[in-house]
Image 1 (cartoon, rainbow, N blue to C red):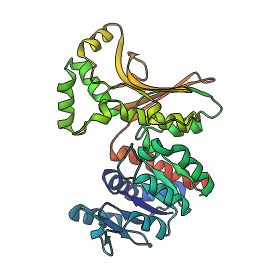
Image 2 (tube, rainbow, N blue to C red):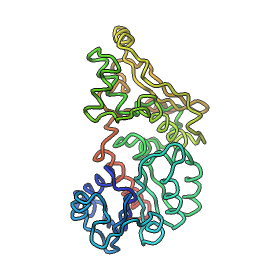
Image 3 (cartoon, rainbow, N blue to C red):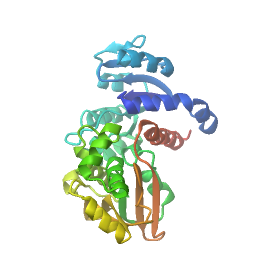
Length: 337
């Protein structure tokens, strides 16, 4: 299977390492032989229709700061030229998220679909801005569209709901979907430290971004709950439809009182038909959503199975590569591989 990577940041490099590590396993277990024929970053592109040597490319790009330094690479080569001009089966869209316009990922995905290429993405931006449009375009173009890495990192939220819960009606989705805020609230709970102190320490550890606004204001969680509402509940929601509250006003005293009452406070995204919201909520200690650290967790409320929950690691290039790889295997199986 010929693969193109658009975006070679932490996720692109992480996926490349996983493809190297799992090459033999994929061949033996699934008859799948991924061949990366092109990689594009912000400075240029590396193309080899016979297949790039990922081990060598990672070393070269690591030293030079761009894949364009790889043998035969070109600087300034636009992504759309690679998407439309290189023979490939699957395009991975792994560029940074832009929740306002979805660009440049939105255009990359559309061009790939119109070129008859299947698409896998971790990019929340295009999904928040134009989910229904992209879903419809994929159907019209006869291509597969996978995005499990956009919600939950390694946690197979979308796959679980679509495959293992088939036959159930999903009535409500509740989730801890942001590892940064969960880490902060966990530390505040265990140590009684103020929000500002824990945030600063999280930034020093690299758990929180230098600008943590999207996380702590609940916007990242709102993006993910919007994606889940559209993909699993059949809604046509936008980010503006989500009632959002972050964790900046949560104080140690509130967490202490919650614990005394047998609860903890978590930033929870909730999706049900006609209602989307994100905010700090009381969660009973021992409940599947009362996870600690940077873990993610999702609970589905169902008509037959009542409640099903799943927990796992929601961030990190290696963990997210699990979902990116799973989507590739899923497409391979769907195509009869």
